[in-house]
Amino acid sequence: MQEPLAFRVRPTSLDEVVGQVHLVGEGSFLRKSVESKSLFSMIFFGPPGTGKTTIAEAYAKSMKVHFVSLNAVTCTKKDMEAAVGEAKIWHPCIVIVDEVHRLDKAKQDYLLPYVENGTFFLIGATTANPYISLNRAIRSRTKLLEVKPLTDKEIASGLKRAVSSEKGLHGSLEFEDEALLYIGKLSGGDMRFALNVLEEASVLYRGKDTVTKEDVAAIESVPNYASDKDENEHYDTVSALQKSIRGRDVDAALYYLAKLCASGDLDSIKRRLLVTAYEDVGLGNPNAVMRAQMAIEAAEQVGFPEAVIPLGNAVIDLCLSPHSRVGADSIEGAMAFAESQGMGIRDYLRYTPVNMKEEDKYPYDRPDLWARMTYLPEGLENKRFYLEENNPEGSYLKALNQNYELLKKTSRRSDLARLKKEK
Image (tube, rainbow, N blue to C red):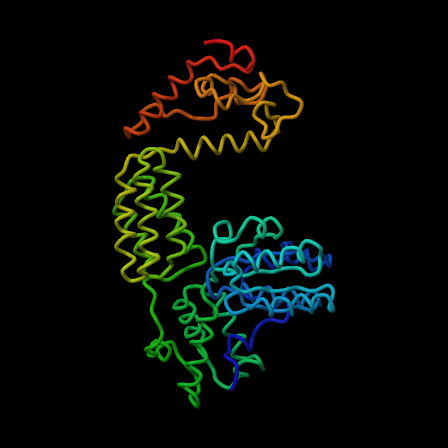
């Protein structure tokens, strides 16, 4: 049985990759890696059918190194051991793991030492957000590269190549440019889907001189997405959803949510709603944040089409709730400061202080002193990272501000020996 068209026309080098100029174009990271013959472990993340595994294979072929392909869903420990054995023979070697976020902790732990000691270079492909779906050990040892949805024109260009390629249709059938562009519009940035439609059309219209746009439209099995996608529309819609919630325009937020739901993009919705809940509503209404998280979990459990109901509730709740960016802005300021300069930790706050007198140690048995001690590093005693909101809306944030003002009036000390003697 012949392989599907999507597998037959995979590129043999980065030069043949369709789209993804930010990854494979002149001056890009992958291009410089190939030119300098410097291998790296990487994670490609992005929507289905955008070429993550294809780019990984094209990169390996461009580097002219041996590669082994695994799928995290189906591979066993025995498969992984065989891949490691193969990598030891063919050095250097790349191990490509599709759906890498599906590797359980035991399998990830098995691979890590071999990645660290250079037995092989790991290239993972995932549709999930790597910051959420992958553990820190994997992320810290790989470069994260985003693979974006293809534009309609990029997909049409790839289809045109598949029509003429010896590995594809080999010119056995002509397709109007409008027909190819129409398939691109239907595909929602998914090249694999587009190639499947192309192959289906080639079977249904075999013997016809030229396949037209109307011919493609007549194929009942082709789903028609609710909106056409240009190069940036997917990301623009996700961005518009968050900005509409931030601006409390509930009608606009519901519209953009509906667009994402119509395309079945649950992953993007989950990520954006969760970030929006914590970033823009945050301490203004922690209960609304919790309800959003519960709604996301419910959406995951029921799936589409019913998932639109809890998601819609969450969007309305977040839009009409009191908002506060105090949490997000405060931690961003603290992060910027921490990254710009490293400050020491006071000795009595260390996990195991060395050569410290008993009277100078942290008073575990004196909770009455905890709120009177200094915790910031020396020289930063008066540094403020928490950004009070001048006119807080929610009662919870008002209570936090009142408590903060009260605590600021407390005189904090670092001379624990004397502090312990005071009543």
